[in-house]
Every structure is written in C-alpha cells, then in structure tokens.
Length: 303
Image (cartoon, rainbow, N blue to C red):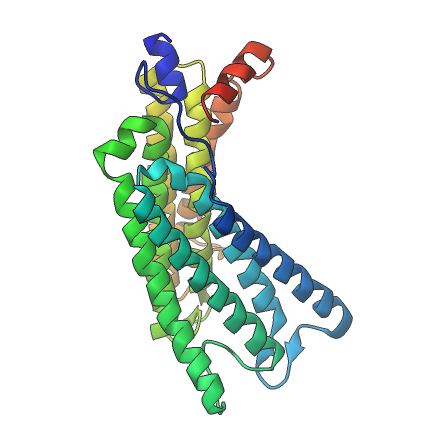
C-alpha cells in the first residue's frame, strides 16, 4: 500500500486494518435498537390515546427520549472500536452503559405511562421519588463513563490508528460534553425553558448529533481524492464551526431567546451550522463512488 493510499484509509502505511465500525459491540447495538422499539410503542399509543397521561406523564417526551438514546447508543457503538481502548476497558464501558441505558428506558417509559414525570416528581409516592433519584444518579453516571471513553480518543494511540476519523470524533466528544453540561443545566434550572423562549433542549440535542455529523465528514474525508492537508482542513472546519454554533446556541438560550427569533445571533448560528455542512458536501463530489475496485478496497480496510 502506498503512502497516499494509507492517508486515504486513515492508516499509516503497512498498518493492518484490524477494526471495523461497531466492531462486535452487539450489546450496545441491541440496546440502541431497543430504544427505537420503545419509541415505536410510544408512537402507537400517542396515535390511539394521545400523548398526555394524567397527572404528569407525557409520552411524546418518552418517544423523543427513546429515539434519542437509541441513536446515541448506536453511534457510540459504531465509533467505540476506534478508541484504541483495551478489551477490559471496553467491557467496563460497554456493560456500564448497557445497564445504565436499560434503567433509563425503564424510568422514562414506566413513569410516563404511569402519569408521572420521571425527572421532576411532584406529589409522588416513595416509589416515584426513588425512581426519580436513581434516574438523576444514572444520568450523572452516564456522563462519568462517557468522559472515561472520550479521554481515549485524545490519546496518541487512537489518533495513529485513523488520524482523520479520530480527529472528527474528538470534535464530537467536545460537543457531547457541551450537551452533558446542558443536561445538568436543565436539572439545575428545574426545566428546559429559560426566559421568554430559550429552550435548553435545543443545545442538548444538537450537541449529541455532532456524534453523527462530524465523524461522517471525517469518514468522507478519508476517501476523498484530495491532498491529506485539504482533507484534514475539511474536518477542522466542520468541527470548529459546529462547536462555535453550539456555543452561540448556548448563549442565545442563556439570554432567554429562541434560535428562530429574527435577530442577529440566530443568523450567526445558522451561518455556522451551514459552514459545518459545506465541507461534507464538497467531499461527496471528490470521492470515486463508482469504482468497484475502490469499493473493494474500502471494504478491506474496515469501512
């Protein structure tokens, strides 16, 4: 394999392609798919009986939570093999996250179907209080274990395996940390709304979607017919623009305003996210998609 081919696959010359997306993370994948199944159940219930369950349950929120956690777990399972984490470390993270996610599904769905807000319990039974307290503890543990995972992507060993892809994942990890901070903000604020129209959940959701958006651009960059410096530049533009967009959303929310208001900062926000998309669009046109030989090469190198 030539040095240029090595750049295109994200590996130094001569390095064996030992890893693929998901890399045997069947437990995390199945737990993520469970989220979609539960979201489907909630969707059917909403269509038949409506979203509100008296006195405090809201199945539209359960639907959103199930789908979001499912996407998050599947995305995490996809990139986990590229963390260069040892088998023991991966097992600790994997099973911790599976257990915590299963409890999260339980608390979110059972309580909403019982008519109880699982996060902010009002006039609940001791059982409701216990579930709510454990839900808060679970949320904090999800943050702790994800920080544990994120650290591995900032180590040299992970970078050397797939420089371009891991660069994209690093930006995604920083965005996810902002999402975790926004989740804590929601708890401290006793709700998602700030001021007249600021909604913390927008920042919360956009941060997590960096886990799909930025690594996707990095994956495209690995395959583009461009110089290595240009490919890395595309990843940095996407990652930096996305992070700046999140910070702008956070500031707009802190001021108590929505991101769709007709003012200057929302224009900046949408401009930044547009800038984050453009490198990916450019890369799509610089990849030799139609070549069967290229497809076979990509398959040999583990995606």
